[in-house]
Image (cartoon, rainbow, N blue to C red; front, side, top):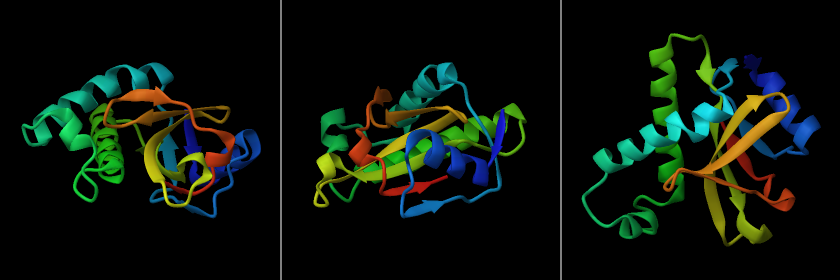
Length: 148
C-alpha cells in the first residue's frame, strides 16, 4: 500500500489524534511496510546492522552515552536501514518508517526518540531502535516532532 505525505499526516491526525507542531516529510510518496516485516525481518536486519556498525563495547555502554549514540542517533540509523532495505525491493516511494521525538511522561527535560511505522491509514506501530522491540507510547507523548 502506498500513501502520500498528506495522507499520512491526515491519518495521524484523524485516526490517532496525533497532530504534532512539527512534522517533516522528505518525499511525497511512501510505501507502507507490513507489521510482520517491521517487527520481524527489519528488526533482525537492524540488530545485524548495530552489531556490525558500532564499536565492540557492551551494548549497555553504547545505549546510554548522551550525544554519542543516544536515542536520536539510533533512530536516524534505523531510518537509514529501513530505506536501504526498501530500495532493495524495487518498490516505489520511500518506506513509511520515520522518527518520532517526544517528551517521556510529558516532561520537557526528558526528550526521547523512537521509530514509527505507518502500516496503513488505520495502523501504526512504534519501535525502540537500539533493542528493536515494540513500545507503547502514551497519548500525552504523541505530539512533539515527526520526521519521514
